[in-house]
Length: 185
Image (cartoon, rainbow, N blue to C red; front, side, top):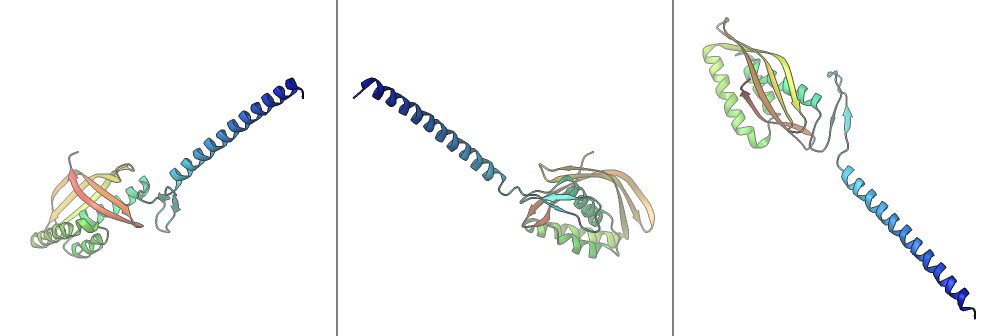
């Protein structure tokens, strides 16, 4: 038995085993890295939707929507709340309540009913012309700035520049209005 050859063979086998262990460790690390990426990507799928009446594309994920969708919804909600007359306030209120978050439904319904009664009592109309929409994807909000014109009995009483904040929540495939309030300019 040649001890030198045996010693050389043992060193060679140890070197090979060490190389194989490093390769296996590298593959395990790569596999864990891929698993982390896959887990991060799950649930962040974006669906691009182009409805026939909207000229901008937008995306939605599990719990968020794009800026363009927020701008479109903010403009629509502002139209429902701020562009009303005694003849239109009731049906616009009913449409608006379809978009209100369930936990805010009662408060929004009471607020809109009080406003409808006030408009009918004094025969007032409001007209809102949006001039700027500033959406925040991170907060799921949109600030709507524009001119609010008020008429009582057909006579202009006020034309003011106002700003409103619309807060939204996207859940279960539906956009819900969480809050709509006037803010300082």
